[in-house]
Length: 182
Image 1: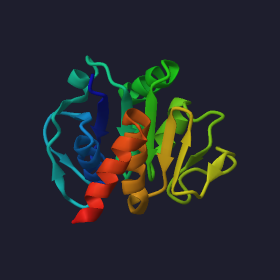
Image 2: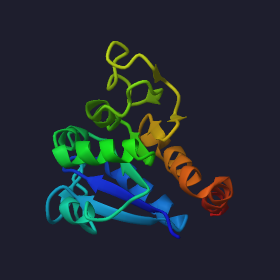
Image 3: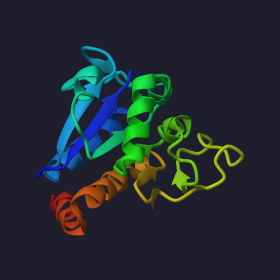
């Protein structure tokens, strides 16, 4: 059975992160459902317009193996302010399914409570040590079912880690090798 990942898009998301996550997971044969917080086109942080597959309300009627959050500002703030996102992150974590966030999006994980007691990384300054004492400067951190990454510069490694978490090291290696052939 194919693994399924929800990638929610909020206005002001980081387009490089969103597109890289979606692209690499699909290269791995993972079903990706891209959901806008609202209907229609999502304008990303640098003005790129992204067309989600569906709305978040419709997507939340489905089951997923993972939720992966692209970062960017104000996109991450918009995700953190949406109670539907907080609820789905809590449900995913409580049921032992994967949650991933890159760049500024780990702040959404903090808001939802799923980073409690977990090591994480994020864009410098997004997670302060006094609010999250287990913060690291590593490019990608996987602590159980929580996967975080630092920035747009680490998003390929992040997406590859998501692939490995869902589909194994061999699938990750196959996707990674195909990216290096060109």
